[in-house]
Amino acid sequence: GADYLIRIDAHGGYPDDYCDRLVEEALATGADSVVVSMLTRGSGAVQKAAAAAQNSKLGTGGSKHRHLSQGQWIDHGHHALMRISAFGAVGGYDEAFSHNEDAELDYRLRKAGYKIWMSGKTQMVYYPRASLSGLYFQYLGYGRGRAKNVLKHRVIPKIRQMVPLAVFPVVLLAAFSFVHWIAAVPLLLWVSVCLGYGLVTAIRQRKADVALAGVSAMVMHLGWSVGFWLQLLGLGSRRGVA
Image 1 (tube, rainbow, N blue to C red):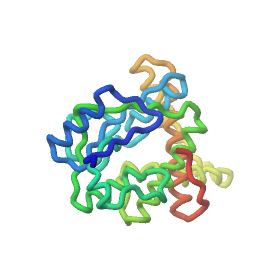
Image 2 (cartoon, rainbow, N blue to C red):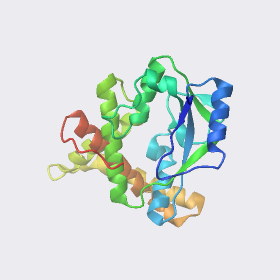
Image 3 (cartoon, rainbow, N blue to C red):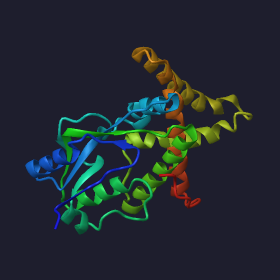
Image 4 (cartoon, helix red, strand yellow):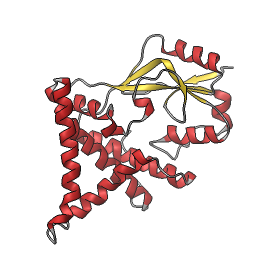
């Protein structure tokens, strides 16, 4: 039978030698899982802005698999190749997860002593949602998935994941600005940082459409935060848009 399985995702682009490089690295390193960098690109204005946000620390908190890798052992990355024996030994993907199933599986793999290698020889290209509503519901699902992971394994999120958690409470707090204007200050600071980031990025890259990256980042933050809190509080069970 086969030794490895290779995962190919929708909304993605892959080099012709993708599978060959993955198998090469699995054999060379002895890794049980080979993950790859996910470089985000877009074509229309909204998609380009979303790509700029997802490639930035502001949008994704500096996830290692969002940038090119030189090849390294890692805790989590975009799933590409997996040793079938390892995949089966830990029970495969948890089908109760519509999002974040890869990070959840990586947690179990590491806990069982399996090793994950981030490829330095190949990567994939991801094409983000082309509408802000699509982006919002996607990140709503990501937030729910991360909360499910936290609840299942009792793991504390990393700082870069915890910062966006404040966004939904900050938005709710701003609703009380009619009582005192200071309630709106955290929201205004968040909006200013995001919009300012988009403008600075657009000026640096000399690409006007990237100015909307701040808006995309805000949509991503809000969707993720709302999804996380709803799942954590047990409110609603809607499966997010994949």
